Length: 314
Image (cartoon, rainbow, N blue to C red; front, side, top):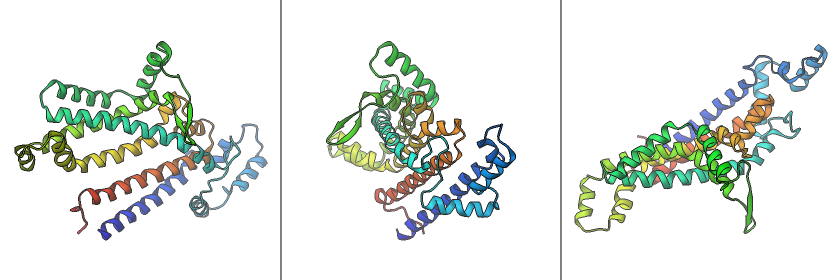
């Protein structure tokens, strides 16, 4: 078990170093970054002064070393647009993105796992057809198109939900989102719902005819207990993998939904930073998002050991 954990942590560190290099090179892939930061009327002396101020006149190796040193300290420079530390702006937007991704994941688990169990335990039935249809819709409908349709129908025509923004209310000293989160969370959750429906249905159909499941049925155990203790527990490994990957997708892939619904999260911040060529803010957002994704994947690998102690590296 110790060797397994050490190996996964080592892989994550190596991947993080690779992410640092890619994020650093993002600034240089478009050519000279200084020429994109200044106005067209800037003189050569002003361009040279800004290049020296930002350290872009030094060798690339030294620039990367300084970038890694700053990244370890959480220092990515100041945002050109907001005139604040870039990482500080990123951390201010994190709670909104976590709320949106968590609610979307909860919706996906409730809908996807439930329909997957119903479809897998009743093959070739109406429930199975409904489950397969939901899985197909989740895999084919673009999230940005769905978001626009939800706004048109439920916000503009019916007036049930606000069209944009994030409204909150205070409960026990905590700021919680109200119904403004429903539409963006549902639009964001549909793809994950389709994934969970497909994998849960396949896992249930694979496990439901095993000998230990038939033995449990013959003992007269309650059907709910059989599904929770015998079927879902043995189908948990692929589900954990999907949930871990999809949660990282929900955290890092919500740029379209956050932009459409003007949700003040990381995705919206990244879209603004790209549109205004705020390179340091783009670097900070990309690095933080990558760090969260790597951390979630590492956590998923460690949860494997708790769910199935047979998982080891020989």
